[in-house]
Length: 144
Image 1 (tube, rainbow, N blue to C red):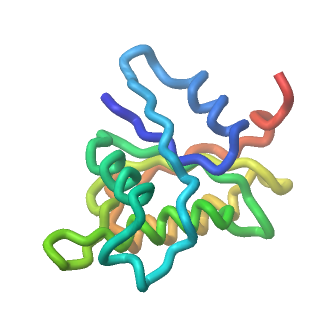
Image 2 (image 1 turned 45 degrees about the vertical axis):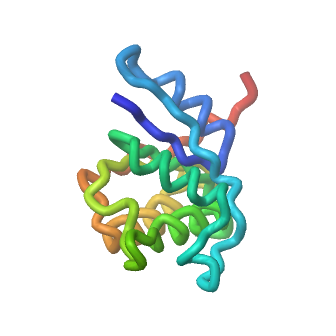
């Protein structure tokens, strides 16, 4: 199984890697995308096309985000926005449609539960399948 991790936090990435089984191939997704621009959505930059290709080949996705100001991180929102505007033969579609997904978070006093809530709202709208929300992480940002 190929699990693509879309992350906005290196501490969460470390925690996710340590929990994965031997039968899981982990691929780290590049979330360093330019800010979403609707003028570019029909012909996105190459880095966005690479992002699309990675998501299309994934068996499942893990979104790992910190909590910033009671919300998901801005780069998390950005890659969700790009993914929701995938074009096939000139028609806008959603790259996350029917894709299994889990969400993990860190930050704030509750371990990022408000960020998870925001990501979940977007994922429900985008028809993500089998959305799992993992327990907020309050310890994974500690130095090792």
